[in-house]
Image 1 (cartoon, rainbow, N blue to C red):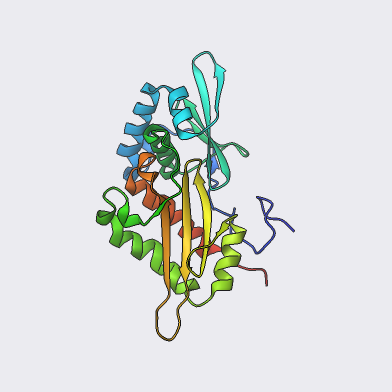
Image 2: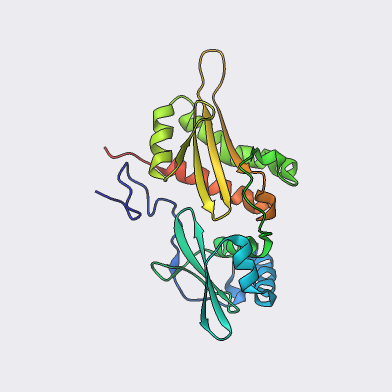
Length: 238
């Protein structure tokens, strides 16, 4: 029996990444939640003024012209395809036509606007090594790392089942580790060191060294937080 993305091991709430939103009705700016209003409005304006063909190429996203002055860019986020339209700034899930949260819409616009086209380096760095990462490090550890240590620190098999269910690719790092394709040019890695009588467990979420050329560090914290949340929400079949 398969879940919505064709995965068999375990059961996940909603979709594997919990990313599908409400029916696609593009709300006016005064309906954008206040915590996203300024960031979304600024990103939307910059997107309207940008060259979508240049940004699609830099971000590694397919571009489709649908009218002489309208383009659609497909952004894959943790395996789910989203469409970002230019110049309308409409965003929807490709498969269902539903509109994601404004947090995700802002994230996708930031990704397309920030992307500098730098190749993925293959070098992993910690969150604190990202630009201004030290400023957000404490909050990132509290929200994204400690909960994983609490759940999986002494249960490596459970960590591996959850990571496999989320299409993680096995890496040869730490006691157990997996690579995840968050965005076309933003891979993440989740590493687990299991605890024992001498040492406490430890979890790290690593980013490619090029990540700062694709998203602001605050947005990278959100990307890592979504990986954390999906791993925590994974529940196995009884």
